[in-house]
Image 1 (cartoon, each protein chain N blue to C red):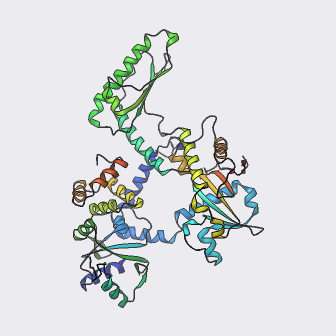
Image 2: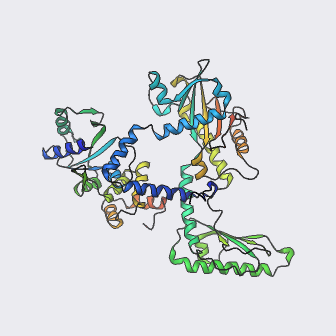
Image 3: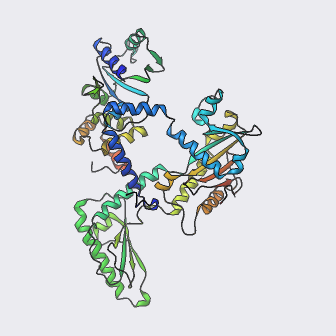
Length: 173
Length: 343
């Protein structure tokens, strides 16, 4: 993990990525209980698009290849972690990157989705395991519900929240 | 629930969720570095599912000595290929059976393990429990029972979320209904008096109509004094045994005829493939115990055999296994019905 954080900070310092934040499973672990995961989702912003209108990771891949990192599909292996660079293409992801909080790990600092943005993004992505994590975050009582609702409002996720909260009996939350 | 008072039959779904919540909170409060250490440790141990599969199949073999004696070797599917240096069959990986075994006569058998467990049912049960708790909160301090005939009343909540602002009026309306019913009952000649009454129409009780499906009022003139006489439906169990049987029926039919098992023998190179449906502690804790005074695992197995009517579908044999510590029992339920464990 130290190596991953070190590399991300170096990439930012070298201008390969402008802004980034860790989301997904590792961000959940930062706030919640640890569970088995191999991958680290690094959301990057702004999203760079090539001449064909496709998201471009060219500069990132080139940079990492020069440092002899191995690619496994869309992941890059750093020690025993699989790191995935995810373009923050959804508005909630973009805001999560911009408003990410600083997290300390073993004497280094990195950027992490806030609880509220993490819960909103997991709600948006909608996979069963993501929803289980939303529930866990909400039930922990540590999510600022006013801030969370504001995020949902800003990014058109209120309807998804209504369905989710009705399904899990969270109407009063 | 303390160690001394532990009674598995008294576990409520909410108890399990609360215990889990407490554990999660304590883990969530660890420093980030420690959490990452836990993740690293988790990577070193076999998947929980794999361990469970081993545990379940080992217990099944212990309960089914006839099969156990026939087997030369067995493993969970990942280990079967890895330990023997065999190339696994082509993807999709998830379409392979959970266990692969080889008999002394070199016959290769695949065993698919399926839990007789319904997550939707769990979620639904939890929701119902929460609703029931909120409704019963209105009766946390139970008033003395000053009726003539009423022994206990059971409130059956509907799915509406109970607002604590309604608690006082709700309580008043419940008691009004009970005392009115008691009055009517007390005026009936003794031969016409009933043992219980189900009230489902709440025309004069708007909050009961809002929150309850029905109220069961049980009468007993020789009633003993009860401190708690206003109750929710049998605490900890929100399903009838029939719901449980229907869950099993749905599971059996779904697995038996599932597309992904249709050509599993040829794809994976098996001579036979078995389906092992197990009822384990999770199912026990989360679902209605299927056993009643005259309805036990044997009856459930017979029910399963009736559902399948001798048709094992994509499988050569279908087994039902009760995987409760000290109460392991196994039946073959298709194509034939027979007890395979020593009962």
